[in-house]
Amino acid sequence: MSIEDDPSVTEAVMVTDMNERIIRINPAFSTLTGHSPESITGCHASVLYERSEQLAADNTVKLKSLKSESIWTESVNIKKENGDIIQGRQMTVASNDKDIGATHYIHIFEPLNSERNNGAFDHNTHLPNRNMFKEILAQELENAKRKHFKLGVLFIDIDHFKVVNDSLGYAKGDQLLEQVAQRLKSQLRGNDLIASLSGNQFAILLPDLAHPEDATIVTLKLMSVLENGFKIDDHEIVLTISTGIVIFPGDGDDNETLLQNAERSMYKSKEDGGNNYHFFKASIQSSAINRLSLESELRKAIEREEFVLHYQPQIDIASGHVVGMESLIRWHHPERGMVPPFHFIPVAEQTGMIIPIGDWVMNEACRQNRAWQDSGLGNLKVAVNLSARQFSDRMLISKIESALNRSGLDPTFLEMEITESIIMKDIESTVALLEQMAEMGLALSIDDFGTGYSSLSYLKRFPINKLKIDKSFIDDVISSEDDAKIVEAIIGLSHNLKLNVICEGVEDADQLGWLQQHRCNEIQGYYFSKPLPADEFEAFVKSRNSLF
Image (tube, rainbow, N blue to C red):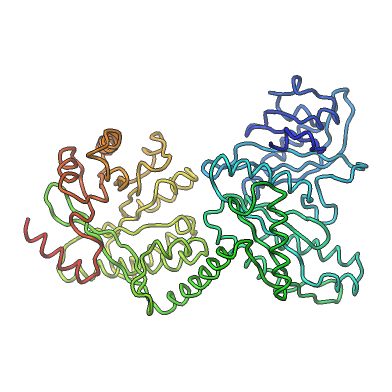
């Protein structure tokens, strides 16, 4: 049951769509304002506010805040059905879908000078209180159940806070809590939610977790942000926190159970001396420790230059020649041996280490390609994959220029591969960035095409040279009529837009024959070669290109 339908919810709740049209209101909203669901549903929310013009002027700021933080609080005057005005505070929460972003807004209104004791906000930290956190958690649980994704809840207690209150008094303690709340909030993602449970305890909702261990990263950031300490009058105060972590699904199916189990885990951290965290399940705790060990080793790998590039040949389907290669990173661990990318790239992405790792890949790929050209191997294009974080890096263009200048490689022999999901996040910014790359002379390719949400009307705006059809379609192109039609359509679309098309994951002669028949331009896959170390790739090119 969602919060707008729950009769036990006494906060006035209104739900609107993304255009601020009222979808529904709860009974408490009707009781407070006199508006019935029949009279108000479908209306624009502005009809309820006394100063609709001012609200409209502030709407841009509000929407930006909701986009970045998923929550907005403001003072508003609500018009009752009889024309009377109610002054109060309104909290707006953006309800998000992990694939398409915000889907609707939940507005919770609390009258000023309310005699109710269960308002939506903690009056000291101005954060949602325990009641509101539980209701929003219930809403997000329903979303998680429908969409089959994970969420986490952190239960945080400030260690030894009684000493602060006893030493400085409760007024100073409240000032400190307000500063702690803001500092913790600064470390959260846009769709995370922090609430004040009571006194020195906080709860944090982490919706849409990719991996349970990701809650560890958030927790460590929260612990770290408190290390610098706080200043209250002339007192320097350093605080630590104990945190309990629960994950849905697995640690509870409702908000009460999740909070209770998170609190139990928090007290386990207390028993171990504080300044610590514990998962409710020991197995996840062990996995999180392994994750931290991997992160530490990964940082050392960057310093020690333990990475190497392997290159997978890209074959022109008409001539049979090797015309390019995709550069693929490997980690040569001193103890584990060669570590494949799927073991460490997700951690690098989430910690931000993908930026320096990606910089190294770009520089090494350019250096190696120029070295091959100088040795007479031929003018091959080297493809470098850009991660989402790299694509958002403001220094990306200057880093590409630096790699080209340092290596002496002509830009026309460097191809940037960007996944379909990345380029569709912000169309205008994407077009501007891709145009800068195209002006530099770089080749541009959309990777994993067909797996994302590209609009064909946008596709023609991108200054790209190539579409890369994902392996998942090639796997069954012979046996699946649907996959065959998709691949055939993408090839036809590419040719109509005067783009090259490359298919990855080609593993047998039947797939090759089908792609030749349907005029695919280039192919790569294990039928020709797995990704090879530099020396083996060089030998492969010399051998194959001498045959044709």
